[in-house]
Image (cartoon, rainbow, N blue to C red; front, side, top):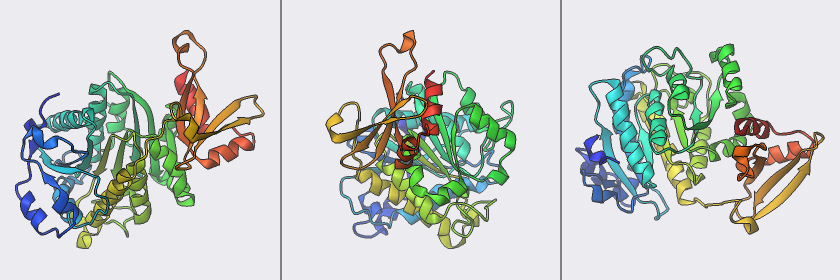
Length: 388
C-alpha cells in the first residue's frame, strides 16, 4: 500500500498546539506526524483531518472543522496510558472531489491494513464512500454503521454529494458490504419509499424515538460495525449548533458520546469518522467540544477493549438454547466477563456452505427475552436471509 505521506499535509502548528495543551493532556501525548513512515510504528490511533467541503449540501464550512476540533480535543485528559496516538494532519484537498476521496481511501487503507484505527475529523459525510472503498481495496467484508437523521439515498446518476453517497456505496463494484445500519433517523425527514428500500436491502434501522427509549439497545448494533460514521447533524441543535442546517430534535449530547464509547469498546471496529461539523455556526465552540468529548469517549473505550471470540474461547461464555414455536432452536451466548450477548445464526444448507456451520453476531439481552417469549428476533431473520 502506498506511503500515506503522498496524500497528507502534516500539521504546521502541531507543536504549538501541543505546547498550550497542558500537562497530562491528549495534546502532550500526541505524536505529530512529519511525513516519516517510521513514526507510525507502535501507533494504535491516527487522527486525520479532511479539509473538504464540496458537495456538502450548502454546508461547505465543514472543510474547516478539523482545526477547531483539535483545539477542543488536545487539552482533554485521557486517563489511560496504553493508547498510542499520532496526528497525521490533513488530507490534501484534490483538484476534484474524487481526488480528495482517493487520497482518503488510500490513506485509510494503509492504516487499517496495519491495524491502526483512523479517526477522521472534519469534512462532509459523503466521505463515508472512500472509507468504504478502503475496506474494499483490502477485500474485507464490511459492516457500516451511520449515525444520521436521514437516509442518504438519492439519484445514483448525479455527482456524489451528501444526500446520495449511500446509493453509490451500495452499487460499488467489487462490493464488500455485508450490512448497513442507521441509528437515529427521524421519520418525518425520511421519504417513505426510502424506508421501504432500506427494508428490501435488509438494512437495520433504529429511529430516534427508539434510541431515546433505550440507548443500551444500540450497543449490539455498534458492536457489529467495522466502520462507523457520525453526522454531527444527528445531535439536536440546542446541544450542537455547528451545522448550516441544524435540527430542533435529535440525539442528546450524552447519547452521542455514549455511541462513541460503545464504538471504542468494539474490538472489530477499524475506523470511525465525525462528519459535517461547521465551525461557522458553532456558538462558543459548543459543537467542537462535544465532538472532542465524543472522541475522548472513543479513546477511553478503546483503552478498555476486551477481545472476545465465542467460537474460540467457549469456556468464557454461557450458552443458552431457546426453543421457539416455529421449531427453531436459537443459540445465545453471554460473556462471563463483560456480560455482553451474542446470537448464533446457522448458514442455510447448500453446497457452498458445507464447511460453514454458523455466523455469530452481537445481540442484546432484550433479543434473548424476546426469544424466550417465542419471538424470533428481527436481527436473526435478517441475518439468515443475508446468508441465504
